[in-house]
Length: 193
Image 1: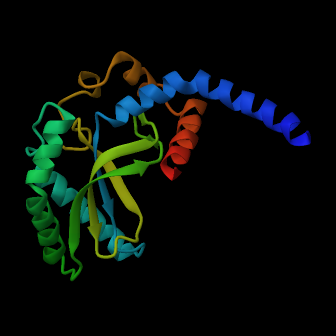
Image 2: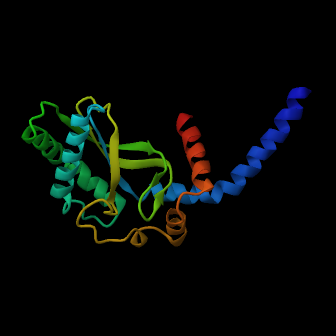
Image 3: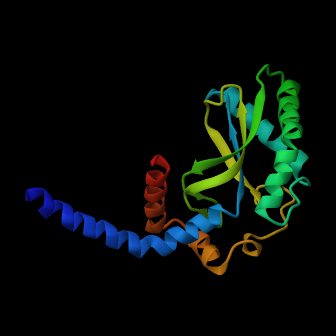
């Protein structure tokens, strides 16, 4: 009897909360289905490995700025799949040119990202398609950005608003709000099941 007195009100609160936040969660998930991210993991957290990660990042971005020319996420995923070997060769050339014996592994994955606050927008937590570059063991701090739409590429000329709906732009433009924490909790729970 005591359990039902506690369980029923908690269940009702949870149900009402989820129904209230469901529209925000739906917008958040639609955003993650339109974006291709770049995720680079350093070999370790040593200063040398972190600096090397940034060199790989710069070299990669400089040499792929004209690569991701598709108009949709699907087109850019296809471009990434067709150029995995090229991207891996780029990263390994940079490592070699900087005197490192580490090797890079480039994969195309779907991975969970926490909420990320950029200068003028915030990306909600969720599972995103990503080009993942692991340097060596890939156990160091990481760096990430958005390849499509081309937010992190130096030749960036397109706006996120060309690819996101009005509701999606409103969510990413309002800065970090408590909504993002709710989205993070929801996405983390969803990914564990």
